[in-house]
Length: 310
Image 1 (cartoon, rainbow, N blue to C red):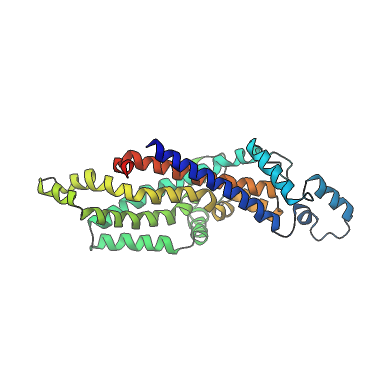
Image 2: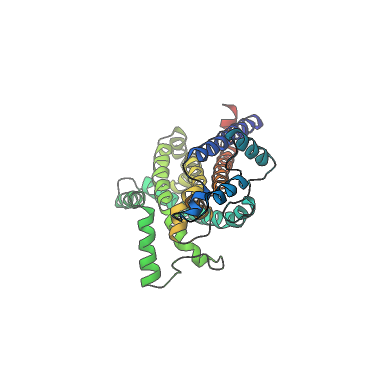
């Protein structure tokens, strides 16, 4: 078990190193800098002033020098200073991460609470109207663009009915969280419904299910005690992947609902070419994804001991 966990951690470290290198090289070859975006179309700015600012920010240093400085600072836990705000990147990210994490937790919670029962019911009632309705709901959830669904919820639930706030974080309360969480969680909910249905159908034909029926167990006991646990092992990967991708995948939703998270910060930083902030946001998203997947691997080991001996 510890060997497998150590192997996963080593793979994660290699992935982080590759991601850090790729992020740095990518933003080093992209045309334009923070200074050029700051100047915009203003032609009356002295080029010497712009050059001095670029020198102070280290943008004129050779690529190997900038990379060495970046890695050295990264090892010390220093992600640099934002070009736009002149604040430490870690401080800005720390102020934003909680909003994104709360949104991701609410969205995956909605997806699990609705998607898993939907898939289980569809599998147990295979071929009935309940199965058809559940799968039509899942297909609709996967087909509708999140941006369009978000606009619909804002228009009907917020503007027409006045039940919930349209956008913003407010005081961090639950009412402001509902609409963005529903919008972000609709596609994962649909995917979990389809995945759990397939997992339950696969489990229903297993030998141990037939053995449980032959022993006289009730159908409810078989579903709850045998099918649910074994199907959940198959669904766990989907839950982990969806939750891990939500921090980066919430860019559109956070901008639509003016949610002050990492996704909105990333969009603002890219438009301003604030390279240290962009690098920090992407690195945080990569780390979050890797941590979630490592936890999923550990959960696999705890739920299914057979994996330890493979």
